Image (tube, rainbow, N blue to C red; front, side, top):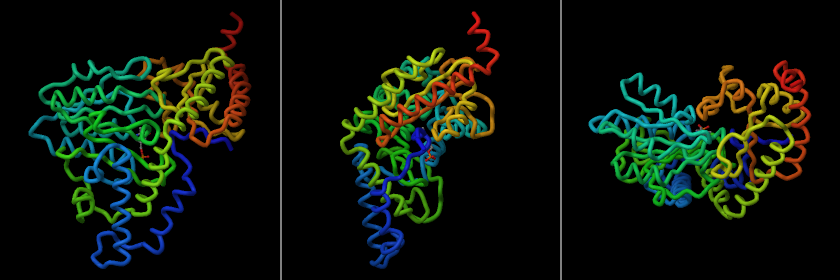
Length: 389
Ligand SMILES: *Cc1c(COP(=O)(O)O)cnc(C)c1O
C-alpha cells in the first residue's frame, strides 16, 4: 500500500507508542487522585506534556488545555468565546472554506441567534486581511480563520490577521490542525488568541488534541464536571494520549526545516510531473504558500470518486477532497469556495505526503495515475468531444 492521505490522518510512530505504554500499565493512576503512587506519576507526566506542547507553539503551559481532538477544540473555541462574551456582541467572522468543525459550529450558533459573516477567499483559497477588516463591526467578538486548509493546503496570512484583530479588540482563533507540526507556529509572533490542534495529524494517537487559550481570553466551559484542566474541561485526563501527543509534536518540530525541505521537494516533484504528464489538469491551492505535504488536483472530464476507487484497487490511498464521506454527491465546499465550477470540482484528487513518503512511492503513484486518468477519460462522453476537436 502507498499511503498518500496524511491530511486525513497519519500513522502513529513506534517511538510515540513506546512513550505512551507506561501510562497504560505501571502508571495507570488518576492524575487527580490524592494518593502518591500511581497518581503522582500520571500528574507529573501531564505537567511535562503540557510544558512540551506549549513550548512547541510559543505558549506557556497554563494556556494549554487538552481536548479529545481538533473538532472539540474548534467547537470549544467558538462556542466558548461567544457564550462568555454575550455582553460584548454576537458577531463571528470566519471564511467559506473552513473545516466543518468550524463551519457547522457557526451554523449551529446562527440558529441560536448569533450573526456569522463567511468571508470569501481568492482563487488560491487565501483570505484577504482587508476583507476581514471590512467585515468587523461593533458587534464582532471573534474572528476564526484556519491556519492552513486541509483540502488544498493554502496557508493564510495568520500573523497579519492576528495583528488586525488585536488592533480592533476582537479575539482571533485559528484552526491549526493541519499546520501544527508542519510549519512554524508561534502564538506570540503570530498574534493568535486561540489555536486548535490534533495529535493524529502529526503521527500521534487519535482522540487527543489541545486548545491554546491566551491568558486573559474569556471563554466558557463546555464540559462541566470535575476540576480537571484548571476547572475548564472536566473528565479524567487521557494521560497516555497526552504523553503520546507531546512525544509526537516534539519529534515533528525537531529538525523542522530539514524535514520541510525534503517533503516540499517531493511535493513539488509530484505537482510538476502530474501537471506535465496529464493534460487538462489544474493544481488547486496556492503554488507556494501551501503546506509542505499537500497536493490537490482537478482532472477535467472525470469523476474524482472513480479515480479514487481505481487507485485504491491498486493499493494507492488518496482522497478526492469531495464530501464523499458524508454520502453527499455535492462537490467540496472548498473547491466551490475557490470558484471552481461543479464539473471541474468533481474531478478532484488530494495526495498528502508525510516525512515517511519516498520518491519511489511518488514515482509508482504517478505511474499508476496516468493510465487510470486516460482510461476514465476514454469512457467519458465529454472527453470524446474534446479529443475530436
Ligand atoms: C482533521 C481536521 C480537524 C478535525 O480534527 P479531529 O482531531 O479529527 O477532530 C479540524 N480541522 C482541520 C483543518 C483538520 O484537518
